[in-house]
Amino acid sequence: MKWITREHPKIDRIACPWLIKRFIDADAEIIYVPFDQVIATAKQLDAVPFDLPEVEYTHYNDQCTFDYFLKKHSLKDVALDRMAAIIRGADTDRHDFAPQASGLSAIFLGLSQNISDDYELLELGMKVYDGLYTWAKHLHQQKHTQAPVEQLLLEVYHKYLKKGSEKKEPGWAKELKEMIQDQLDTNMALSLQQVSDELEINPAYLSREFSKYFDNLSFGDYIRKLRTDKAMHLIDTTAYSLTEIAYLTGFSDQSHFNRIFKKQTGQNPLAYKKGSLKGKKDTK
Image 1 (cartoon, rainbow, N blue to C red):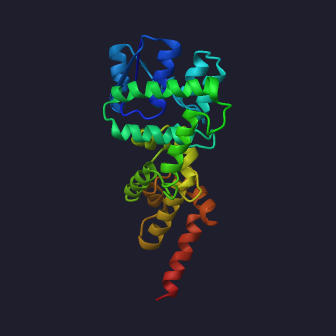
Image 2: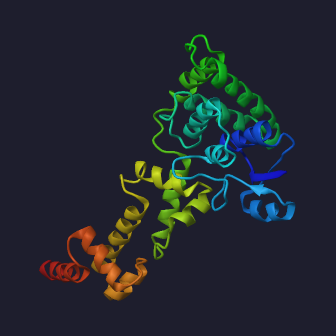
Image 3: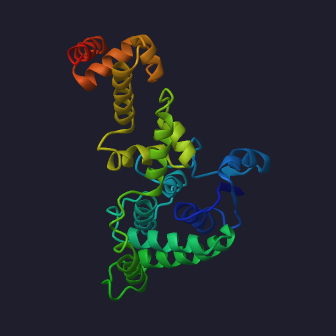
């Protein structure tokens, strides 16, 4: 059977092929292609797509694709459950899920940087996950200084991750801020799904992590705040009608504009406009 996913794998897209070949189909063929070619190529090759939005084998809530494979194929194995927590934490940047997640993340981020051939990386990754499974099956109760696999993960964490702990935001957050900035001159018609597709990030993960880097606001609240700020600026500096301003700032209709504007500012747009005009007269 053929399985297909996005190119440039790191954690989940190595772990899932390992799980497939070790527990589901030893003869499975794993295929990596560019993101925008996965679905079309899957149909052409009669392959099952995984780990991308809007397919069956993907992230659900705070769980990653590896978790779904376990559930879908009824793989009952305590060692796999231990691995799932580590993989989930590493793949979603939730290192609180398992202490080993930080090390696993560091290892595969480093390997993916050093190895450009996806299939070479997969071959090496299969060995890494074989080792992790052995630890999860037989060695997980040993102390850190006794378990070779866990000791390696901890050494990587202390050597590399702690040095980078001062990093304030991931690359996707910076890229998203640039996307939003580019939208400020339009009607701010960005949706979470559009952003997720553009960044190639699972929407559930993006929704959960968004507030950490955007003023502690959800994606929807942040966009509504920007729309309201832009509306206030247009009211203060232009002669546009409120209906025109509602359209220019991406609100679906005047009623929606009035409701969100009042929620953000404490007054409706008409009252704000009257106050703005009065302030201009008073300064003359």
